[in-house]
Length: 498
Ligand SMILES: *Cc1c(COP(=O)(O)O)cnc(C)c1O
Image (cartoon, rainbow, N blue to C red):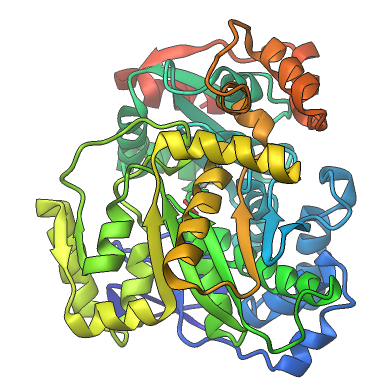
C-alpha cells in the first residue's frame, strides 16, 4: 500500500515514510492510494475478537511495510489493558432505543486523542528506524489543551524520542494545565508561553523550518516531527474503532451483520469523522456520517452549501476542542471527492490561505452530501442536553459529546432516519467538570476550585471520577517555565541540552 499527496499525486511514499515525515514537502497531506476492502464475512469474523486483534486486522492492511512482529509490538504496547479504564478499550453503551454512544475517553488522559496518540509514538519510532537511521525524534507540540497532554502521555519514556509541549499561559483549563505540568517521564518538557494558541503555533512552525536549528539537531542525530492530526499516523488508528463499534453493536444484538448504522461525530479538525468515512469506503455499512459542530459552524455551512468561509466571528464555547475555523483534514476529503484532483485541491487550499474562503462545484458537494449530513447547536442546548440525558437515562456526557447528541436528536426529528446509530463521545465529563456540573444543576455554577468541582460532580451524579484525573491532586508540579514567544527557540535548546 502506497500513499500520495493531496496536492501532488505524482508523489508515492510508503506508510513509514508518510508517518515519519508527517506532511508532504509541498504542503499536501498524505492519503492512501487505494483503500483495502472488508467483506461482511471478514467483518463478522472480527465480532469475537478483542480490541487489540481488531486493531491488528485493520492496521495491517494500511501499514504494509511493517512486519507482523513490529505491528504486534506497536498495537499491544498502545492498547495495553493497564492504560485503559475499560476492558473493551472503547466500549459502546446503549442510551435508549437506537441511540448508542461510543466512549473513546477511557485512555490515560480521558480524551479521545488517546486512541491515536497512544499508538502514534510506536508507529513513529518503528517508522524512523526504517527511514531515518535511528535518529532521535523530537516532537514539538503547540497545544490548546487536549493534544498536549495526550502526546506527552503517549511519548513519555519512549526510546529515541523527546517531546516538548508549549501551551498559552492563560489559554488552557486548570485541569488541562495540571495534567501537563505534573507530567512524568525522562524525555518530556512543558513550557507556558506569554501569548495565545496562535502565537504558540506559529512559533513552533517557524522553529520546525529554521535551518540553523535543524542543522544543530542533525549534528546530535536528532530530527523534528509532528504529533498533529495532519500526520497519517494519527488518523489510521481512528479507523479501527468504527469497525470495533460495529462489531460491538452486532454483539449487543442491536444489529445483524450487513445492517446499516448512522454515525454522529463532534467535530473540530475533521480527523475523527474522516476516519469514519474511510471505514465506510472500506465496506463498513455506515449510511450517513453526521458532522456535529458548536457555534463555530463553518463545517455545517460548508456541508450544506459547498462554500467554506472562515471569515466569521470566532466563539469561545464550553466545548473548546471544537472551537476551530480551519479544519485541516477536510483537505483529504476534498481530494477523494473530487476524483483525486490534486491541482484543484492545491488551488482550493491556496484560496483558503489567501482569502479564507473557497467554493466547490455542485457535483462535488452533491457527492459529499450522499455520505455526510451536518448540524450545529448553541450553548443553551448543550447544557440542556447534559441535564436531560442525565435525568432521563442516567447517562452523563461531557460538553463535546452533548453537541453531538443534540445534533443527532435534531437529525432524527428532521429526517425521520432513526436506524441504529452510534454517537462518538470524545471526553470524560470530569475533564470539563465546571460546565457539566453547572448544566446538571440547571445553570448555577458553584464557587469551587477545580478539585472540589470534581468532588461535587461525583457527589451529585454518583458517576466514577477517572483515576488519572483524581490522582493529579497528589502530584507535584514539575514544569514552571514561562517564556516569551521570541525566546521559544532558546527554550528548545535549553530543554534539549544543546
Ligand atoms: C480534538 C477533539 C475533538 C475534535 O476532533 P477532530 O478529530 O479534530 O474533529 C472533539 N472533542 C474533543 C474532546 C477533542 O479533544
